[in-house]
Length: 238
Image (cartoon, rainbow, N blue to C red; front, side, top):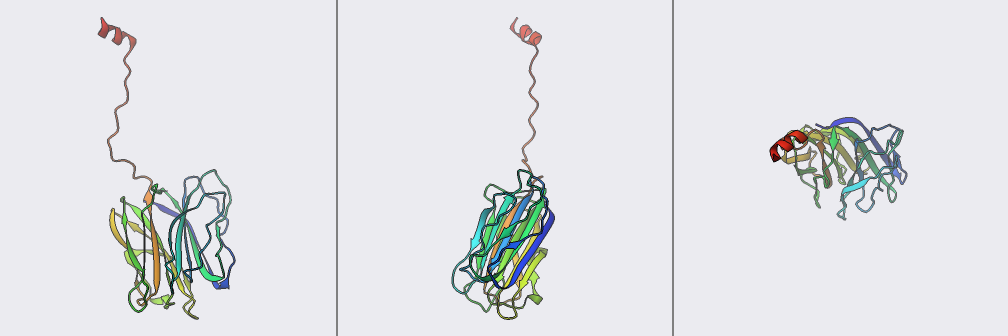
């Protein structure tokens, strides 16, 4: 199963347009980096992450318009031995926002990772929740959700025994609430992720599957190629 090396949660709890930047870290080649991002405003996106001369690929963005937040997920696989590096992201305009950067070992991403999202356009019932069909055993779902209704997150309850990776609590002042979390999934199949409380959210959510790099192929190993000797070849011919 993928193993979390470290995660870095950062938040901006006053209205601004400045970059969020992790502390310096030195990753190994092959580490899978997942960046989950959220803002209080569906029209204000977080910029593509930068850092370490790595390539960060957008995997899913949820920005449906209306009175809703913005959430997105990027990924990178470390290469080129970057040495000490940071990861940064900057919003497109003034907002309140958050970012969580996860570093995973014993992990890999599918060419097109399994992702899923969800949201509601009307507050008053429900919590941020969705389901994702994982493609292999012993994977991890990393996810981000945001609530424009700004409900107090003190009663939060996570599905799937998820680990809380960070919450931006802007409930006082109605400045939105962001949730970042991840959960282990033992078997492939449809898996719920997100929250069961608080209810009454105006929410968006997005998740991505991180695969176990030890999964490999289930096909049987092939026998080694045996090259006959010259003597054996002559004997067969004669």
